[in-house]
Amino acid sequence: MIIIVKHGANEERIQDLIHWIESQNLITHVSKGEFTTIVGVIGDTSKLDEDLIMGLDIVDSVKRVSEPFKSANRKFHPLDSIIDVSGVKVGGGNFAMIAGPCSVESHDQIISIAQDVKAAGANMLRGGAFKPRTSPYDFQGLKADGLELLLEAKKITGLPIVTEIMNANHLPLFENVDLIQVGARNMQNFELLKELGHTKKPILLKRGLANTIKELLMAAEYIMSGGNENIILCERGIRTFETATRNTLDLSAIPVLHELTHLPVVIDPSHATGVARYVKPMAVAAAAAGCDGLIIEVHNDPPHALCDGAQSLRPEQYEDVAKSVNKVRAALAE
Ligand code: PEP
Ligand code: MN
Image (cartoon, rainbow, N blue to C red):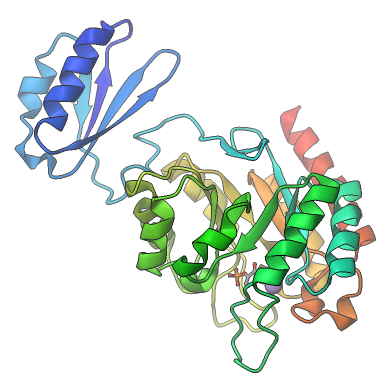
């Protein structure tokens, strides 16, 4: 349920209303805009008397929210959420340019790529340390050592780091990670989501390979219901019957998500296409469709990458993508 409070309503009376709702074992979520205050109510609201609330002179209107996602719902929070990733803002007109290798492979590899992507315009560095691989015989990542190397790259470049968590038991290792990624394969690992909900860490939540937009929002809701509202959503392509690309990039997820939720939406054209030469057109299209950022795989030696070389751009190719994306964004802003 959402309660829209009248403009200029007395703050004490608003607090009385909130306390009264919370005394009935319901959770409130207050969103204050310039002209409107919205009190979102989460829980079994069937016991709330709508007419009684409507009768209060501070209340403008009351609406039942039928969607199962509440905290993530734009009706609860009409303005875009802006997520602060160690000083880099994402959402509400602020654009994330996340770039780096699929996996951290060595000291020289990650430092060199970090410096190159920074020079090309990236504002965050990605790199997998714990890798979810289809085959147990493939490179599984440098794990804790990989995280150390990312922290070193951060120290040298100042770029916040983005890396994937696969097991909640690893959380202590992620203390200095700026943006924790939940990969596509773990989007519905509910125990992991609940644990992340108890932290205050920004989370990059990727859409599962075969999950609907609503399921993505329910996954976000798991994290938010634990108290962590710092979530950036990521569309990275879904499984379809098409085999020409690794996945099928659902670009319409951008306007759909922007309508349904206040959370920022980042696009991953690398995993979506699986082919380096398709990354630029999809990145430019995503920027034109209004996404809040891009996460792109960049490697200094793609043919020898230990993971996802075929979809990785060389630093100079990334620079070219970044320039085109900036042009599209500038044109949209005109
Ligand atoms: C990744 O970003 O390295 C990754 C494994 O992505 P996804 O979970 O989208 O497949
Ligand atoms: Mn990858």
